[in-house]
Amino acid sequence: MKSSITNVGVIFFIAVLLSACTTSGKFVVPEGSKLYLGDRTTPVNIDSRGIVKTKAFGWEAMGLPPTKGIPYRLVVDGKTTKEGRLRAKLKVSSIFFPPIIGIIAYPTGLNPDITYNLVTGEQK
Image 1: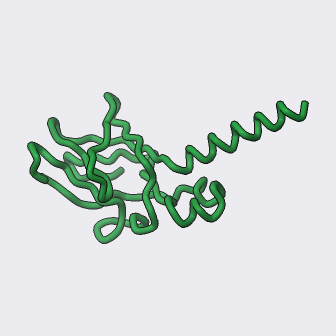
Image 2: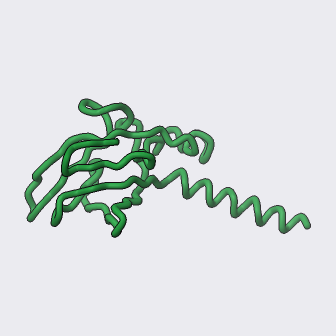
């Protein structure tokens, strides 16, 4: 009995830890462009539904555009065609897990309740 409770606790802890480290959002991007988020050097993978899953962002990404938010770049054929900032959302799970480290490292994520339409510039 005790080991099954321990196993459930370990699985729960790992699930919460992983969810505190990632973020996801829905995007509409121009055909043939690559999307770079934050200061990262590799483009994100956008699935067929427009969903992006990526590592969460630090405190510097918190806030509302145009002066704050998650920086993005759209690149076509190696040239930046558009850049700006995306609306961010505080990841509440990062406040609780991992304690203190989550607050310091990755408290900011994409807002899963909106669509980031980078063709028209709307974030609703």
